[in-house]
Amino acid sequence: MIGGGSYPQPGEISLAHNGVLFLDELPEFNRNVIEVLRQPMEEGRVHIARAKMNLVFPASFILIASMNPCPCGYYTHPLKDCTCSAPAIQKYIHKISGPLLDRIDLHIEVAPLSYQTLTATQSEPNSLDILGKVIKARNCQTQRLIENGLGFTNAQMNPSQLKKYCGIDKAGANLLQQAMEKFQLSVRSHDRILKVSRTIADLANCDQINAAHISEAIQYRCLDRSSWGTLKE
Amino acid sequence: MLVKIKGSALLGIQAILITIEINVSMGQGYSIVGLPDSSIKESLDRTESALKANGFHMPRTKILINLSPADLKKTGAAFDLPIAIGLIAASEQLTSYIPLHQLLIMGELGLDGLLYPIKGALAMALQAKLEGLTALILPIENVKEASIIEGIAIYGFSQLKEVVQFLKTGVSLRNQTTHSAFAHSTNLSKAIEQPLPKLEDIKGQAHCKRALEIASAGGHNLIMIGPPGAGKTMLAKSIVSIYPHLILKKPLKPHKFIVYPIR
Image (tube, rainbow over all chains, first blue to last red; front, side, top):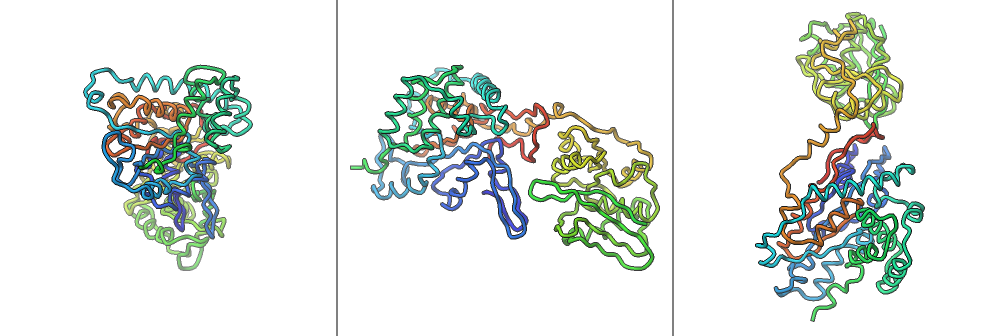
């Protein structure tokens, strides 16, 4: 995954440099395979140390992962019954370590579609329109971050840039404080929420981050606050 | 006669300038020194055949080839072409119009003298430019990749004979290519057009689409949790349709990997 061999070759994460790395069914990967992603995810590059040489490969990627909520897959299903025991669900979710989850900005639950939605004829958002919005938001980030040289996206902001560019209004700050205390979020989670809110604000073309942006960002941290598996009767 | 040519070895994704010294003198025996791996040692056999096929002769005296810096291990067949050119020049079958030590020459040779593409041409072009060399001679297939680097002349050839002809006269049978990076931005992003689902192909799941939009806009990581068949994989693949294609606005600090949006 990270690359290597006696004559080191770039791995999947370097091949996904500046792109997307998609790991389907994340818990099915060996733990040591996914845990080595931690350092490259923070730094945007990977160091490979061998007896003869010490190499750095670029590896700045977006990780998109998917997983089932439990071994049988139906724990969060609105209608179907889950057949797993509570410890089994806990064990499954714990295959993804806290530190790794902490580095993932957006957690979302995907619910199965109802028959009505599936057959509805309403038009779906066009990907070209969204692409336009995305490019606009990216341009605005590039302009902001280009002077510092390193990264060009909000996710790559360093702490000083975070401080400089992520001004929140008062209502937003209050909301963030409450969320931090209630869900016992880590400092990294706090920074990530800020970065995501910055992106949401960019998409909305706002200079300042407000409470609505913060609240949307907080709702994407569902795994931080969930008591996964303990709710089972 | 002693001839020096520049070549390039790859260490990770970085190219390191290698000086290939070829000495043809009185005596007997062929040897390559400077930590070559077995594919470089075999190079002399390929070169001998390629030289004959293109109307040159292999010197029957002592041939000593040194790859300097001599303490770095070199791998790969891409040293065939510089060795062949060096042999031709050192055995006085070629008087080069262009000073050989100002050129970076890399390429793999077939037994009939055809040039095969090599790995890492972009890194080599960058390194050659940093070292102040005047031009790069590569297999024709690598020209597009290498010409992302501006400010160095890149010449592509498909035959050993053509390379020698060029060195003799300074005139390329093919056109010299020094494309700017702009010319290539469109070609680069074409490589990714695969039949993947688009966002509008997916029914419902509005909040997931919104999350994908945010991930794509800000470069954020994303995890999706849900029962089997809910559409997680399809959603993930559809991010390609809303992910900005890479455009080389200027020759950025180049990396070898620039075009894969999803793996």
